[in-house]
Length: 528
Ligand SMILES: Cc1cc2nc3c(=O)[nH]c(=O)nc-3n(C[C@H](O)[C@H](O)[C@H](O)COP(=O)(O)OP(=O)(O)OC[C@H]3O[C@@H](n4cnc5c(N)ncnc54)[C@H](O)[C@@H]3O)c2cc1C
Ligand code: SF4
Image (cartoon, rainbow, N blue to C red; front, side):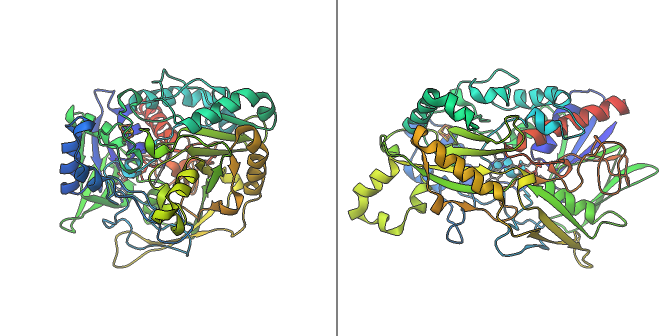
């Protein structure tokens, strides 16, 4: 069988991983495939080859520039090794617009996609989430395990395992920061009363090689030793083994099927020439928004507008009464260190999830200007000894939906799309979460500063999907079967978040990779 995969993000990696295990499967990957700029790559290679005690400060500064928010109160766009290359427009963002406050950088054109900048937080969806999908948790388990075995996985057994089993052996986390240790200790002391209020605290679960971590604190701007997983690592491995043929600089803009199989037209971004590809099966993994746009531009009678579910993001700072050591005085890893789950129904369906960061250098940019003055140094120190930043998520069924309207363009390969929130309401669950956090505050010594919490705009969470959701039964014009197929094409499989029936508050990408792996597995079962 001749397979074509579009994209090299985690969804594409899930498909490639499964197909590559069958000797009779030929795999071609076409991708926009943008890379880190050569000068930054050169600096990175130099750092990666040295012990961290020998790093030059100039090299470190060159690859760890902090992002700056464009608008006050907004989370800044992350950088990877000082570069915005995962967000850069290489043609895939032309014709994408958004209403003010909504995100228009929704399609990555990078080798490895948005997994070059992600927070590496990985958890499966709960069983109760899958009880509402046409795919069960048991169906997914082997595919979660396959994805977790492909990535480096650091996690520990704690109260979160009741709803989120580890599924495979994991590496131990590095030593946590004093704040994270204190919160976990306090949670241990009050776990019965906190659990009774639906608040569960546990360590983070991260896709990184914890055992090799030198705690240099550069995680949020890009690990110099590449210990944080990116799907580019899976593709590097499969390419090096000769198992896949990888072609970059190609932007797919039309897909279809005829009696000879499936076809894709892609524009070469260097020459502007179109190239045609044919395959027995095509797997589309251009990210939920990219895939939606590609499908809308290719269907003969597309729906006028589509809606996507989003797990809305919010930022909530916490202060603690008891201070700890100034985080700038110790070496630490700066990914998310502990998780708070607010479980409203006790079965892990109506949940809100908060990733807690005790410190990273970007905090300095978020402090009031007065604290940057030399005279304010003692005060700044006291603030940093007491703050934690939480990045939280609501489930899609408690969040405003994203509306996507589209129009075919005569002079552009892909249709124009506009992104807007389907409603402007502040979701009621957001207030409920803040009240639960307030009640848990005294026990954990973690007080949410609700006056400074903020709900992000539409599309900013990067946890969205469901434009062509899996539904029980045969495919229709707007819903896919369990193999990600629309009624229009039985040899074309959508494999990313575009097929998710819902997006819970817990992390998204592990399920993208695992579900793509499952789809490829089921296709092999039928097609072979
Ligand atoms: C700052 C940030 C932090 C995040 N943190 C987390 C986290 O901690 N945990 C979590 O679960 N998720 C996180 N996410 C979300 C996560 O990164 C994405 O969900 C995930 O990368 C989606 O994978 P994907 O394969 O669907 O698409 P993408 O990663 O978007 O990859 C898309 C791929 O398709 C290619 N492509 C796009 N259009 C075309 C085209 N027309 N033709 C050819 N190729 C094309 C691109 O080159 C790219 O390779 C985060 C995202 C961001 C931006
Ligand atoms: S602290 Fe972060 S950046 Fe430094 S080695 Fe560990 S994972 Fe990499």
